[in-house]
Length: 95
Image (cartoon, rainbow, N blue to C red; front, side):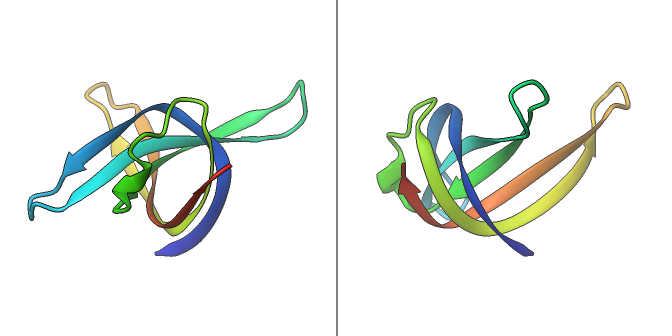
């Protein structure tokens, strides 16, 4: 695992979920923008957090977080490859 620190915006809704052991967690996406006004790029991170006090996060909210990062390569049914960046959040704060 790699530790990552992010500051970004929540992308879409935050979901309250329960794992197979009955433990609640939240799942949400964060995007970070890199580059200038005309040549910007963004990266989307899929985040998982055991601190359910943040289950009210909304699309566009700014967050600061650290966590363990893992990268997963997948292929869809058409053979297109995707890179998914997962972050298991250790600390999180609102911006």
